[in-house]
Length: 262
Image 1 (cartoon, one colour):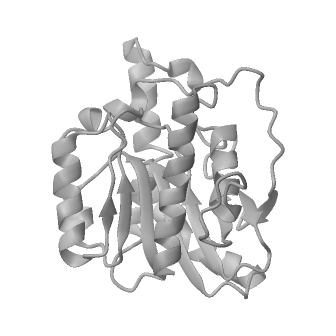
Image 2 (image 1 turned 90 degrees about the vertical axis):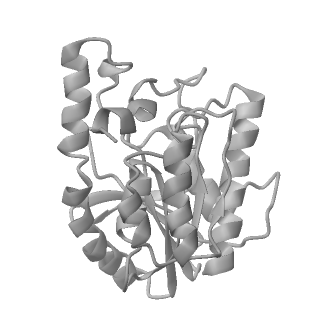
């Protein structure tokens, strides 16, 4: 499947700009690890850590709020999964996908989007950073004894690539995936929780997940059939009650799944 087809769901909608702006009080803090600003949130005594791979739009408020929910639950709807400490590296810094190119309508805009995905967002360039970052996280958080990952869009690809033989991660979760490759799925060695949206190719999702499930029977798939690609991060629409409910439900599913395997 071509790159253009693979990223169509990711690259055809702009992020959601929330009415009232971005007035959200972050629960975490920003810490520099290996020269990468990282959003860290959660109970400092938590013994379970989650490496969070955001989507290509970076530190949108919806992703930051999601990281806080992932770490500490949503108080109004507790799920009983307990506390995690979450680490979300800001790989793009001040240069995530340029919102001016969304949705891409001109050849120049389409080229810019693809150049980003095959340049700074090339998983092969990010993968070597993951191991040293985990070591840095552990050095300052020796109480953490178990790790997993959660990825969105591009981040699902990253989660898959880090979940091969010998991985430190106990489980992997991914929502509204992009850059899916069945060959990656064949090499995953831990349980996976996958939550696609209405926009991903069902045949590709089924092929990818069936290969994961074959080697990791405890894996779980749930399709959010009325949600758009990005509903858990930069395209989360908190002004739409149903969309917000599904945003929260997605995080509950991920939290309870990871808790079971960590």
